[in-house]
Length: 141
Image 1 (cartoon, rainbow, N blue to C red):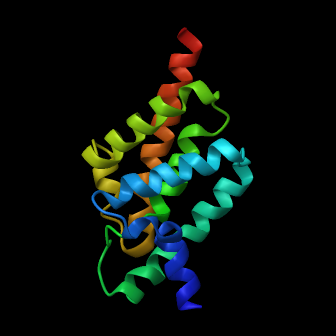
Image 2 (image 1 turned 90 degrees about the vertical axis):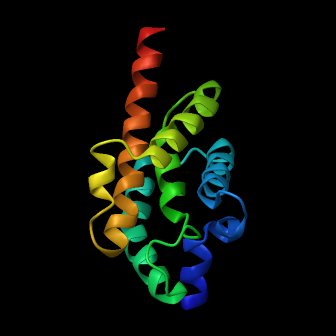
Image 3 (image 1 turned 120 degrees about the vertical axis):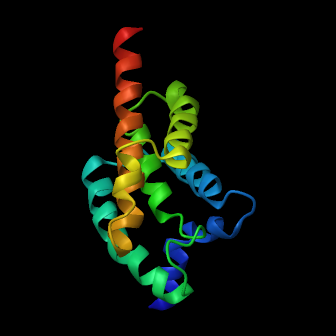
């Protein structure tokens, strides 16, 4: 079971890529979203499972909020591009990475939650904020 948790948490291995494993995990998630339009109900289910997966991965890796754990970036990226036209995917990727890396308020506070919840919340917030910005851009053009 630990091997499966680690495989998922490390984004099918993308979390081992250097530099910037979060960017590699986000890119893999974007490629998956290009191939498969992930339903919102599945994104929500995977986000909830992510709390458990990331919490367990911390223990397996013996490292708090390890940069190798990219499951949270993957879910955040899927939120960012959910039901978005393909032409906006590059913009969503850039916005999501900016928000995830810079962790503007209130995203920075969410990361302080304990364990897997803290690992997931900041990326979920970055994904939701990215999705809102993309929706506004689409609406106004």
